Image (cartoon, rainbow, N blue to C red; front, side, top):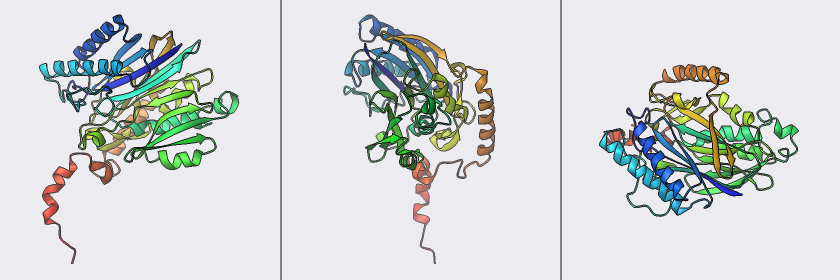
Length: 364
């Protein structure tokens, strides 16, 4: 059975500030997706949140980029934004960059990750959702999951994984893509994706062309031409039976690696893996958070979720993230706590510096 998994998210109002999600917005999403399921637009759904982002997880048989499914998500976000305005939530409708829906939410503010698959007899899928960071946050985990034998034992000992995976890399500012096969072109891949604010992994396929993972790659500042918040990416990863095991998929997040975003989208910080109930960004509007929901997919139905980071095995990682946050915060407005000037051009800093422009003169 061919099934499409669509994960579409948007920041439509924070409670309080940018820290969390008001229950009324989740309730509105659940109501509208239940109605869409009854009408046969979607097969199944799950609504959740991480930080101040509303997350819509939907399954259907309409393929990727379907206007009806994207239109459904758009209507949910519009209705949620209206509720956010009524109750005075912060940044209400922040990710809605246009009033008119054009058939696809890509380029209109929300983040999107979709994959169409031929469903296996047992289909474990993990949905990762992050807040206070950018699409480049997935680069290191995706590399470790699908290319690092020290992370994924199956790359060495499983004949189904041994031939490797193909990474599609997007150059964000030029809109160009390149496919790189690992392990053959591992060093070429690393030369690009280590620059996380310029190159991002868009999707990963197995050596035989079967889709393994997809990530949202939308950059709000590049779309809007101004700072409108960080991009808060989502990602879908298939696991087991020809793909990395669930434990291999989760393992990279034990690092609490540094990602761009955090306060005002302008700082580097550790990515902290948390349970859904702990996905509220408070300290310096962070640190950046990631949740992981696991589902078994059967005939398009979502069996689950399992809150995969709700596990004491990640307690040490969370403690490490807090220690990293303590250290890097002491840098205040100095790099490398603050992002480099190239990225700060897409924040509110240029408006502050503008008043100094006429006071600069040639050095004597």
